[in-house]
Image 1 (cartoon, rainbow over the protein chains, first blue to last red):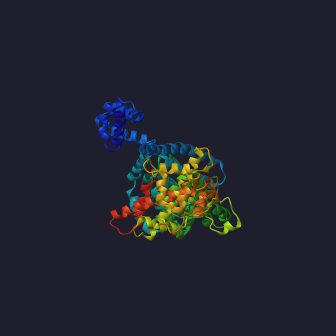
Image 2: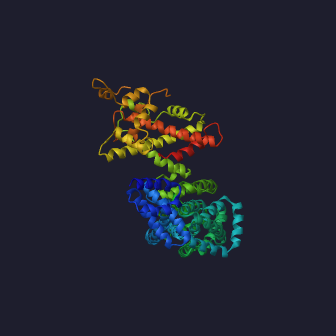
Image 3: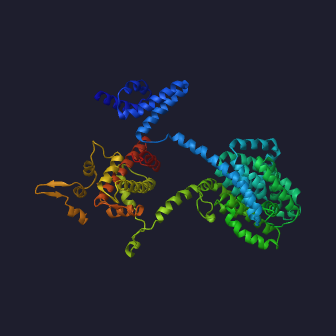
Length: 547
Length: 74
């Protein structure tokens, strides 16, 4: 048994380094019955058996992975990181697809029933986008191919467009991101490019980068088409000189986008196009029931700034705009229409997306602003994706802040905001956030580093300390709770250090205490028995809390 | 050696802020301080090694970041 024990130990030790050697050894050790090696052996044996059946190539890989897995299991890890990641990747698109389609249909119905145009437009655009985004990458690729088949002239025009106006560029960038945005763009473009860009960006970020690439292509083609269609749609609206150009482009692109869109999107886009045409004919009329599309078309001509697609970001703006739009609508056709459309878009986006990137859209209303928005949108790309996934509750107006820093800040802020339970007058005057003095940390770190340390490096050390304390408190709470106590005891701390590998059988705790802590503390921690039945430190000394 | 003593009050305050409902034994904060020192020691050693590998005479932020990723409370 001793031999087997030793062998099993050797097996364990070797397992980490020499995986292939385990194969031959496993069989021999299998005869011994050690609980320790049993786990690994059973798994490895099973794997080996399985591998024999599998082709050689797979066998090797599985064997290695099995061995690794067995080792991992022995160490306590549950899953191989790959499986977890794969599951995560698979899960998301499935769920989203199911939800989006249902939500799309439900949203369409709701839109029809609702009065406000805004909601209709927003939902439609949102659903379109969602439906479009939901499509698998393969579908997107297929959609792209459709676009390519069409008009390469559109692409050429696209190149020309960016040179034209900032609006164009704005609309193009967002469109590129998401295919869905194309459909949406059609609608949105009427209202405002900027808004659409924002929404598109947000949506595309959500789903996949591939979509973004595809969308861009779509957008380019769409912008191109919109130009053509806008001219056809309404000469009346073109009265607004400034916006006519972008509007045309938008309308053209929109129509094109509608045709080239995904099946679901195509149907939707066609519907939208019809609405747009209706609107074009009838002047600027904000009829909620017609839906955002009609408004979009009208607004599109008036102000190509905001697009329903941008809704998510435009939410905040849309609200304000709606009020303005409706009131001012009767007064002046162009401006209120734009606002209304934008607002409608925003609302739709809001409903559909629920995102916070409204800030970007807001700026996109004005042509001049659109440029700014483009830049903002660009910076917001990642953040929107992150926010979309996380549904962070940041305000719409928070705008273009890099998402990562924002995301990082939000989890940190709530913790810091935790109120200290004891708050007397004196303690309030002191620092509200008890944090270890940075100079103190610097001193200790410098002492241990024995090298000159850059100033920026200290910042990182400080961050590490914060994380360390957070984790430490969690661990200690877990240990105390595990022991059924509410107070952290010395035993808990020793357990912590043992788990961290600081305290081992060869390195007991008191050796560490003697090594690191000054004499006064050593006396406090390590009881020393003295003759006369006195133990130092005495309990009274500890309780008095001296030192 | 350490010029100052262990900041016992601050340590308790930090723990309080994270887990207000949690209590700490009498000399517990000293062991926390010990753990903290050892953590900084490991971090500094790892950062020093990284700086040596980069043939740098000072510890730069990137060395510290890499060191922090490795430590992970082994």
